[in-house]
Structure formats: structure tokens, C-alpha cells
Length: 141
Image: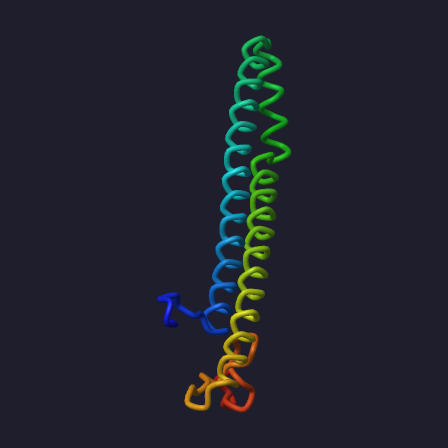
């Protein structure tokens, strides 16, 4: 603190606060997207179920039997599972890319901070958060 009682922030404090703010924004946007997709999925599911019930209730038994045969032959449930699997994989990859980006940012910040402090030893990781090639033993990587 200076003589006026106001705390002076170092460059390290400001850099850490900037990284943390970016991480919170990224997490908040992912949470909002997840919530919107979840709510939209529920609304679409309820609509499809209600629409299907209305259509099935007005059909004759022969039509219902034909529909059950079509579902059985085309394995529509497997198509739905494939779509769900593809969407899950895309979401996982998007989140993984975000985490890698954050790891690179934090690694670069750590590298800048360590370069200014002679007594702060590095963990031996690269800027991407991976083990340095010189530290990797043969057969353990």
C-alpha cells in the first residue's frame, strides 16, 4: 500500500486477474450454451411426443402396425443414438479445445512471471502444459 492507503497492484497481479476473468467468461458462455441446448432439447422432445400421440390416436390399427414394422426395419433408435453420439463428441471436442487454449495462456503467463523472478523455479512443463522433451524418459511417454 502507498501512503494514501491504496494498494498498488503488480504486473503479476494484473496478469493473473486478466487470465481469471477470461476463464470465467469462457465458463459462463459454455454454461449458457449448455442450458439453452438442454432447454431446447426438452421443448423439442415434448413437442415430438405430443405430436406423435395426437397422430397415433387418430390412426387405424393397421396403420399403427405398419408404423411399428417400419420402426423395427429401419432401427430408428440406432439413428437417434448415432446423432446423440456425434453431438456429444462435438461438444467434448469444443470443451477440450477451450481447455487447451486456457492451458497455453496460463503457460505463457507462467513463463513471463518466471522470467522476472530468479527464485521461482519452473515445473519443467512446456508453454502448452506438456512435459518437456528433455524430461521424457524412453518408454514412459
